[in-house]
Length: 224
Length: 224
DNA sequence: ATGGGAACCGAACGACCGGTCGGGAAAGGA
DNA sequence: TCCTTTCCCGACCGGTCGTTCGGTTCCCAT
Image 1 (tube, rainbow over the protein chains, first blue to last red):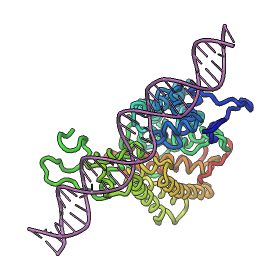
Image 2 (image 1 turned 30 degrees about the vertical axis):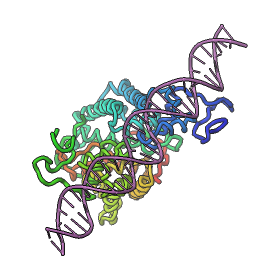
Image 3 (image 1 turned 180 degrees about the vertical axis):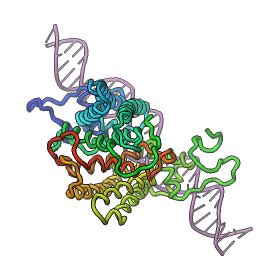
Image 4 (image 1 turned 135 degrees about the vertical axis):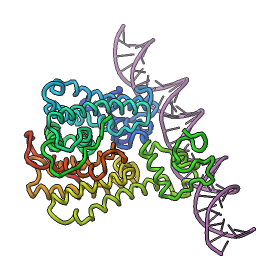
């Protein structure tokens, strides 16, 4: 083992000056490292030993900060979900005409997605493999349903293109927005606010206005 | 739930008690069962024992049909990728004005996605964890790049909304289309062809036409 | 009816999994 | 200084992982 410091450059040394102090962890800092690993290799494919090595710790040390592997996941998912649900509570998402509320909701969702990129990315990859994942999946469904209802409200004001079932429109909208987590990396030339504005605009423009190609029957794709 | 035979209703075919024949497998039929499990629980989280049980076999029997767990994944991903690349070779995707080619490509991509739903779903969840996954990821990037180039060609004909960088448009388009695999289930009221027409139409309408909300700088989001 | 290949099984392998435990080093207040 | 708390470690546990292997059962062409 190493005498001073971890072998790999895994531990991002603190900006605390050129401190020679050994990087001691608190749960939040450890969470950051863990989530990064979960995204890189997948939750199930990441072992506690790998988590430890990435943090410059032995695997047993992790249990000083978290009760279990799943507890780490729970905390990460909770952080993402809390941030998303906070958007639903914002004034501009609750008051005013539906189309404006929908635009605000989408734009802010993208901003949160970028702001909490690792945590939201992890959330969007959850498939319901454990109790924790099922819990996250259900909370996420609640969020999606709120968006779907807003799309439906927009539709009832005539703001939706003909032939497009609101549920389908909501799914396409959310799919487009969520997919941003798969490629966006901060530090690029595209700012979060600009991306959010553009994505929301593209999405809303896509589901609204006059039809272009004729697509027949309605067909129900309800978000449940 | 069945009384005799495998615990879950995993084996679709004959009930074992009364029927004389038991379902024998060839690699393709076994692949179908395996991919279903991979989607349900994730590749890494699915054990060979679970695969066996789902197929009504012992786990060692699987090695008669596949050399390894990863070989199963490789075959599944290959099937999805072959189907997608076949679309690129279609006449209407290679000849004619870029906007029409793009529309055809998107529409056919959705149709393939629905047609080979489990395999494409698996492909879209790959994160590059093994050599096989890295290989699939790279092939997929080739496909995405072709779409991006078609979007860029469409842009140069003036078909793209102002301020929308073609690379970003392609990402949003692909994200929207790919997200269909997360919720679409065949047998619903929405046919594959109708869904494909509508999704392609919504996507293209979203990235084209006059701007709606003002989004500033271009910003590069190049697909590589 | 019989020989042979395809399909399948249970047992067992080494490696590694998530998690536990007792004890040692470092920080902080007194 | 001394003592308590926080943080961390190596060794270890029972269990499960993907894979191997010798042997059995089934189907079918001959």
